[in-house]
Length: 134
Image 1: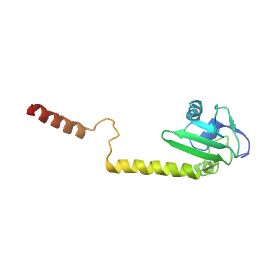
Image 2: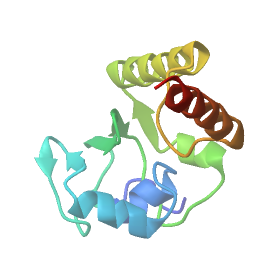
Image 3: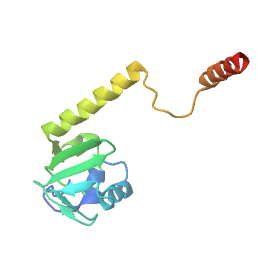
Image 4: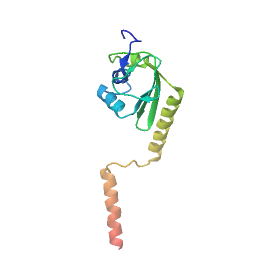
């Protein structure tokens, strides 16, 4: 981090702060209106500075952070964590969503998708029994 207060493009900053996997995904999120800086929808070329409040929506989760520093390049995760502070309500929302997903997984709620071989065989058995009963 050469100068942690110099303005940086928002797509570069999202990537450097490890909030998105690639810079192109960051630019795509900004273009798609899923990133707001200080409450406003922006373009990928918008600069962020320390003190800006950034909101990123990824799926059902909304991450809200305050920019503490900037970086042009992606570094270690420990350095990336120093670039922002996540707000308390954002942390609470992410934890609530994670707990909900754990609960759904534990209760066996079916999220759809391709059936396993075992599921298919069970389905075929019950369908065969229904046809014979007619």
